[in-house]
Every structure is written in C-alpha cells, then in structure tokens.
Image (cartoon, rainbow, N blue to C red; front, side, top):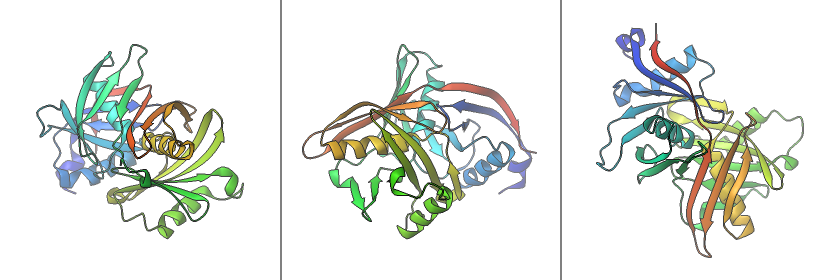
Length: 273
C-alpha cells in the first residue's frame, strides 16, 4: 500500500450501526487496488469496525451511487447503510450499484425508520442445498453461507475453529466471501451466530450482525417450508433483529428483502497516521 495513503487523513468517513456489524463507509476517492489495504488499516485502527465500504460514482445513470466493498464482496448491511446516508435517514427510496450484485438494488426507508433492501439471490431452488447430512449451503450472489443448527454440534465446541474447518472442507475460502451460520430455531424467531470470511482482505469475523446471513436463513426456511416467508425475525448476536421476506413459487425463488434499523455513529475525518 502506498505510504502516502497510510499517512493521509481521510476527510469523508461515516461509521454506522445497522443493528450490529459496525460499518465504515469512505467517500474519499480511493483507487480499487488500494481499497483492501486501506480497509485493513481502518479496521486495525478501529477494532470495533467489522467491514469497510467505499462510495463511488455509479456507471448506471439510474443509480444514486455505487458501493464497493473492501474485498469486492456483497454486503447487505453496508447497502442499507449507504441507502440511509443518501436518504439522510428520512422515508424514501434510492437505487444503488453494489459490488457482488449484478443488478441495481433498491433501498427504502419506511415511516418507522426501518431500512429495507432487496438482496441479490439466485432464483433456482437448488441454490439452497442440504449437504454432509447436517449442513445446508445457500449460494447467494456475492457470498455463500453454510447453515448449521446448534443442536447438531457439541455445546462446548470452539465455533470459530469449527467454522474455519467447515469452510476449508467445503473449499469455500477461495470465494470472494463465505460464512458459517450457527442457528437456533425458537419458532417464530431464529437466533443466528455468524462467522464471515472475506478472501481479499483475509478477515474472519464473528460478526455482531449479518444481513446476507439473515437472507440465507430466510431462503433456507422458504425451501424447508416449501412456501414464501414473510417478516421472519432473525435475532443477531447484537440482540437486534433483521426481518427477512422471501417470495417463491413452486419452481423458483422470486426475491428476498431484509429490513431493520440503521444508526449513524460518526461523520467526519479519520487520521490514518
């Protein structure tokens, strides 16, 4: 990484809380090759930050902005954060380009302040599969998630080591992003404990919230129930909730949406010295 980048001060930095999963968004113009190293620098300076995204000009004229994540992955919570910033936390809708997503994604804030976004999913029902007898794997666009029910693992197991081992066994660390979700189903609520790997920055976080994980849980439930899922409450490690809606028919998934609160924690400059 260029020494000038390390020593400079970033002038336009936002730190947000999308129900956990503290996210930093950088509006300063940073070239793509430098973004992963800069993201790691920010997370080293601010250990509470779990992910970093960069706000760029979109190529599509219908998009208000582009969100480029630190490893080129997709991140639903960061998408909600950028939507919240562009709408200034007020009710409305905005369309975004997002890394890891092929189409524009709409972010909406409702009158209650919940921030909702569509998730980039694969429409085929085979994108959710049962493997290894007790694991489920969910192939999203931009990230792949493995789901394991807590009742099927030893109570005192080191979850971080187990999650890393599972990603190795399934050869998922070669992907841009992949995760393991430990799930406790307490109908009608589902509790989730996510461990997320991002290849290009080599981070492996036990995240306090995970939007793509919540979406994966919604798709998993829709596949198991053989029906659509509406406002499924997925409790994050932060104790906050992300609500998931998945629409499907007999032959495919139609769409998936997540919603939940977003708060601005900081806006200003950040010294990297």
